[in-house]
Length: 378
Image 1 (cartoon, rainbow, N blue to C red):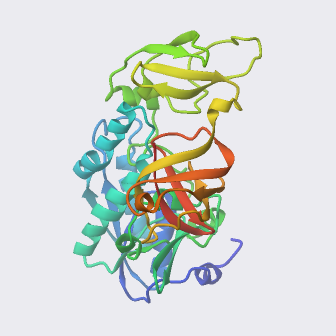
Image 2: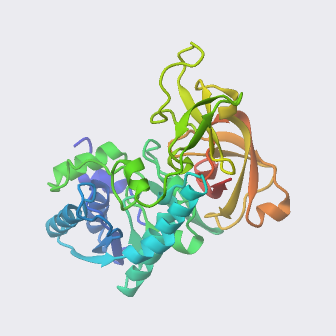
């Protein structure tokens, strides 16, 4: 290892003093396993909790629930902690997946991980952990919290390449005050080193990148099981039909692959991109070239605002914003009337035009390293 265990633990500052009971959400992956080990080393009473949140086609090649549970049990045995499994499949289907399908049916592209965190991982899971007598919960997310006189701040992880605060922006102050993020102050490379050094059976397991709790699978095929296809024309900005789409729900703004337009219409050789959806006429708008003006936006409107900071940002103040995960913060101004920013919606004007802003995704605001919250792009 590049650092010994004492050095690793010195990087992580407990938010409450051990001993205290911590229930750790364990997925079978490396991150949550190392998070549990860190907390155990710091003197907490650690209990592992494995959540089963998806039951449809659970026996398919894309659902790894059984293997994940085996990995959790193996890790818990190595660490010497108790672990239990809990089924939140009904809650997931009602609170997350139903919304997921509604958004796609409306032509938007939702981010199920954002809603899953707010409704399942930090609500159903948190409530269950409190019944078990937990003082706090913990997860393997890459983020940090800071307790201040004005409440709890949600901060970016120190490893910005892994920062997951974007997915956590819909948590409220009650939720964020009861969670520990043991990995927020160490790099992912060190997490892998710890896993191998302590002999975790899942040390080399690859990270999950699929839909929250559903897994990695051919997305169009999966969505087609739940939403009907309704073919229609693909039109250029000039109104020229250059193909047929299979259904507006199956495309997203900025999409290049899988559109099905072969060759070059004007001889330029530039790729085609989805630029918009006309839901009323069932038309998919496409443009040629990554930098086409119709893929660039100077502003956006977001609704269903949620402020993890416990208060809304100042209007006409300058902030950073992400309109998709892993995007660098883009400078922007909030130019919304007070009555709106205090309520449900806000508008952002960017310093520079942004590429492929996508309805249904989250616009998340930052004041430096502090995540303020955000809303759903409309």
